[in-house]
Amino acid sequence: MEQVKTGRYDIRGLAEPDATAPKTAIVTGDSAEFDAAELSTRQVNLELRRLLYDEGIHDVTVRNPGAKHSIAVGILTRCKLLIDGSLGYFGCGLIDGPEIRVTGRVGWSVAENMMSGVVVVDKNAGSLTGAALRGGDLVVRGHVGARTGIDQKGGTIIVGGNAGSMTGFMMQRGRQIICGDVGAGMGDSMYDGAIYVAGKVKSLGVDCVESEFTDADQELIDRKFAAYELDAPSSFRKFVCGRKLWNYDSLEPNERKLVL
Amino acid sequence: MSEQFDLKMRHLTGGVGIDTEELTGKTFPYQFDRSLVDDIDLDAATPGADMNWLEDITLMTEDGVTAVFDRYTNAFLKIYFDIPEGREDEYARKVLVKHLQEGNSYGIWLKHRHAKYPQPELGSWKDDSPIVGDNWRPTEPEGWEPPVGH
Image (tube, rainbow over all chains, first blue to last red; front, side):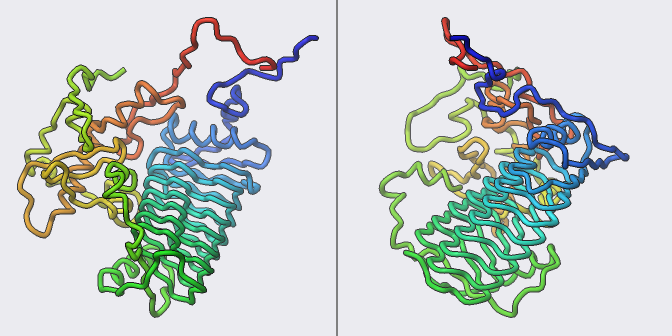
């Protein structure tokens, strides 16, 4: 039977391995803008990399992102990106350095694995917001879904509204500041880090306990809210790990480094 | 490819601790001389309005020596100079940023050999960072053929 070749095989698993940057951006000085409406995900990301890496542009606006998935991922340079609209899942993931604003909503796992940078979402975010975040600031002005900051290893997540269940699940480092209410199981199995909540918490997860709120905590909140021009609620409660489940040091000392 | 590190100089002990010197066989002047990092501006070196991710970086110890953790390498970088009291974390952060800006992080250097996609080597740390990973080719064992249908 004759075999039909469906396209070039790429061992890295790239979709559209032969795609090229569309070069449709309008460049004005150090900034650029392009319309993503008719572009595939890979074309949008290739155009972004062409502008940022090859052309040395530091300020890019993407119009009509159309809630496409995996947009603006793997950007490893200092720059400013404006996403004028909404994104699907895994938006702005695996980044190191950019300052990104999304004017719409985002799907699950926005800014997952961010090393450094700033991601600001003007509306709501789905579940797994800031999953495995390593560093940087992730600000969602609206509400977020379940498991916000799951496996968070650093950085700061700020939520203007409410957060879903299992917020801070397996959190290992970093900070979450939630202005609204939080669902059931908050901080379940967290290993380190802090979760600040201004509203009500439905229930705490395993080994999550309330802690003393200090002047240093207030300084952090005041500084971050001033930076992002957010109105801070009048008071927060602080939640941390109860350290009943701590066993890395005796069982697997090298595991400690994975969360630093 | 950068020849910055000679892997023959490595001296891996196989112990629990792994530090940068063990991985690279090298130390760097700013591990010993505080004045070499004094002019580092931490806010300017990082995205956003404050120190951003450096808030999570603190002075630690490795093998009884003060050290800062380099997450790009997953190893400690030891600091041998005296640090003024109350400025421990500040100097840990400055040493780390200097280490990254000078391209001495072993994990970043590995991009020359292993990066699979075009990307700036030191994009977050240097404006004129070269692109690496743009000529990556998979190593194909002799006799390998593409899977049926591809």
